[in-house]
Amino acid sequence: MKSVRCISSHRCALPHLAIVMPCYNEEEILPHTLANVAIFFAKCVQDGVIDPDSFVLCVDDGSRDTTWDLVIQAAKADPRVRGTKLSRNTGHQTALVAGLSAVRDCDVIVSIDADLQDDLLVIRDMLAAWRNGYDIVYGVRNERKTDTLFKRETARIFYRLMLLMGVNLVPNHADFRLMDRRALDALLEYGERNLFLRGLVPLIGFPSTSVYYARLERTAGESKYPLSRMIGLAVEGITSLSVTPLRIIALTGILISSFAVLAICYALVGKGTGHTVPGWTSVTIAIFFMGGVQMLSLGIIGEYIGKIYLETKRRPRYHVENATWKNNR
Image: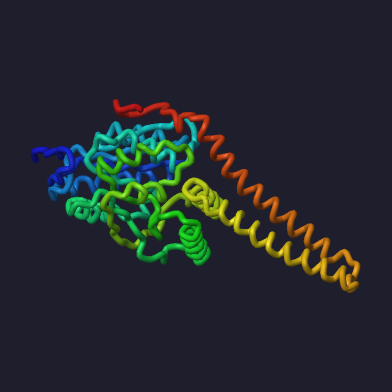
């Protein structure tokens, strides 16, 4: 089959597809994942859906197990498998950006997790939407039956909290998405170090749509997003993309000041009429309440100051230690 490459924004029949897959301690599931990716590529090439030179890029985010050795072995056995190894663990979002930066010359790029709970076959629906003119296609879960009740409830709270804080994101969408070259170039123009891609991608504003799918069960390994990571991700997203918490502090200050004025008026009236009753309970409650509000406010402000501190340093997001292919960035 003759390879046909896209030119500019033309939606050709055989786009050069790159699947970017961050990997961290995935030795248990990676061989199974790459075997499924190989089957997917073969079927898509046979059906004339993608360019035969399409590939998957595994980004080893400083794994402590044999993940990188497995990537090297797979790359030697199959030219459609490529690998990039980061010098240390930088976090999922940074590892994903490292992979996206390395494949920005491809026509379409799909990001997906290594556990393959996101169905590979959905990529074909994403490609169909891309051919219809969409630059960004989100993979959105239509149900969460594979999750525990606790996981479902915490995820629901997470998305509601993010929307309440003014972060524009797609509910039930993680990092399973398609972007074409134009959208990826726009995303990579965002230079901040505190990354929350789920909130950054909608800011691009290019034509976008969603495809819905049922998430699969994890066949091996452990989830890399326990409750602590979800909380950290929520804090990262809110403080990176919204100033709503700072406005809440200001509103809280206004409300407390209003109550304080009323309390002062009440105290003055009581003093003038001689109805004051000495006591320490109300004073103690007021002191502890105001102390708690102040400490919470300082903590939120400190979080934002910390973000500013890290951004002004302009340190590199990551360093590539090794790669199995020539585009070692």
